[in-house]
Structure formats: structure tokens, C-alpha cells
Image 1: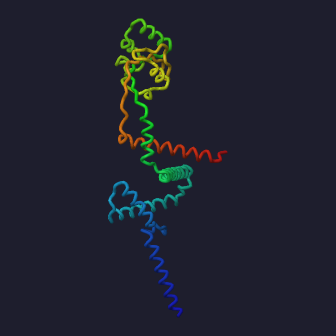
Image 2 (image 1 turned 120 degrees about the horizontal axis):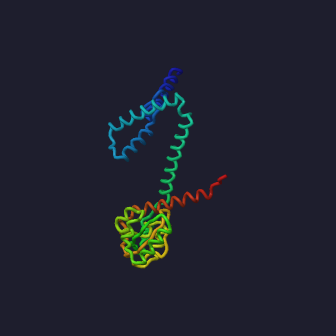
Length: 257
């Protein structure tokens, strides 16, 4: 009876050991590498375009074994306790979790087709107006006023533009080609859109680049790109905005001392 009990216990132990081995793809110095870990590794490779196969599974097993050997040696040398290594490990952990939170938030609040189309409708409600302008950029307000005086006296804008600090437009008589107001810094944009065709700014316009004398040559209305062309970009913009609002809500609730 006692012998039968011992045999039963041995069989149970062997069965349990077999189950443990089935859950692991390898054991390195007593530390198991789980099948789940290997499967997740394979899934990442498949996302990158690798084709699942027995050969790939074998390569993954070897890679995980090699990593485990190196990791154990790093731990034996006490490298995880080094301050710089601890910082980088923690930074990587934070980045992974933050990215996971972002994906989780997006999946919980999926962006619908209707929402993207509504945003497109808002953006396309107003026409796109493009401006063809010229400018002369100089270092001082006095120089800019002198140029305005010369223009009033009949001097050619294209000729005076040769002294501009902006070499690209200076070579083109100050021409900035067709562009929307958003293409320029605020002070320049505000002054440009206030002009009528053929007008020159009455006063110099200051920006971080210097002092501008601006002439508006023409305006035109341009078509908005069709929805399919901007769908992906618009989706990304809306998601980025939603994530910013999500972060702001979390920050508003947080106790920061």
C-alpha cells in the first residue's frame, strides 16, 4: 500500500513537471523562458512582416535563450543597480506604459467616420485664399522707411528688392509666390491681408527676422483637397487633439505639490 502511494506521488510529480516544461520553451540556469513570451515575440515579428514557420520559432527560441544568458550575466555583475542603467530602464518602462495608455484610450473612444467628415466640413466651410506678395527685408526701421519713400517716389520694387536680406526672394524681385497667410509669421500675415492689390505697407512691419516692406500683387481662391486625400492626416490631427484634452483632464484631477 505504501509502495503504491509512493508510485502515485512520483507519477503526479512527473506529470506536473511535464506540464511545467510544456509551458516553457527553455530553462536557462533554472530560470524558465515561457511559451507565452515566445509567442508574443513571434507576434511582434509577424507584425513586421515575418512569416510564421517552425524555422522562425526555432530562431526565436535561440534568441530568447541568448538574451537570457546575457541578462543573467548583467545581473550577476550588478548592472541593474547602476544609477544610469536604473534610470534608462525606468524611462523605457514609462514610455512603454504611456504608449499603451494612449492606445487604450484611442480604442476606448474610437474615432468614427462621421466625426472625421464633420471636422472636414468645418475646415472646408471657408474658402482658401492665397496671396501673391513681395517683400524687402532689412535690418532697421529707418532703412525700411527709406525704401517706402523711394517706392512712393516711383522707384521699382523689384530693383529695391535686390538689397533685401532674404536672398531667395531678393533674386526674384522680392516675390514670395502664392501662399496662404498661415505660411508667414503673424505680424507679416496681418499686414499682408490688410492690403489691397498693388498696395505697399504704409509703415514697416517688424518680425523676428527684421523689418519688412510688403506689397500685395494679387489674391486667388484655391480649392480644398478632397476628403480622401486628407482623411489620414485629419484623423491623426483629431486623435492628437483628443489625446491632448485627455492629458489635460488627467492633469486637472491630479494632486500636484
